[in-house]
Length: 219
Image 1 (spheres, rainbow, N blue to C red):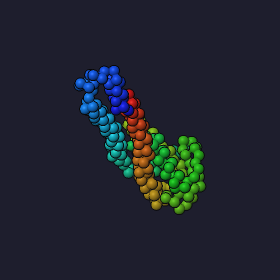
Image 2: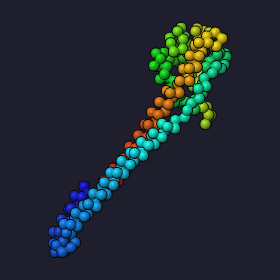
Image 3: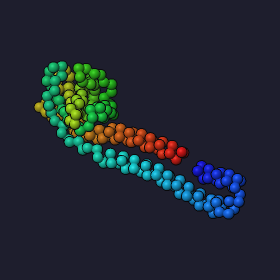
Image 4: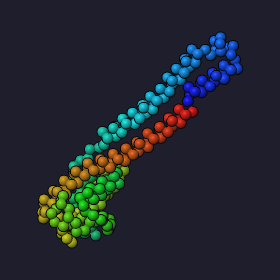
């Protein structure tokens, strides 16, 4: 488009001032030089566009590389359910509570726990077979507690084999260890959710940058 504009300008000049054109102002050689300069500028802009995309890709890779490593710290603890202290397995994650909860929901859905309901500060799955933890049908209670600013989010999971029969190392060490392993490996799911959010945000940055670039070139 820029090259066409240059040609039109010179054609108009050639009609109005033929003598000057024939002498020195706008020789064919000069036109070629101008077109060549504009061609270089256009190539430069295109390279800049590629550069913007490249920088965005580098930033995305950096985001992945700098995802914090989460400590495998799942442990037993006492948690109150309906004002009564019960045995639970808890773990902390250096990530926003919303990201942790989304990862946990996704993982439980893949495990086939089905529909859930909320009750007294917990999300519950009743009478489910959670083979990753136990071969028996169980009731699962969990919540995600947001930490203070800069503090990790905490996941609390309780598993009952009916009523107040919550598992502990003393009555079902195998299931407790399985639950600890589940929470420790949840870090991979958290990374995926966080990466998806970071990537989406980065794509928006690239999209806006390309829009501004295209507008600049069009001008």
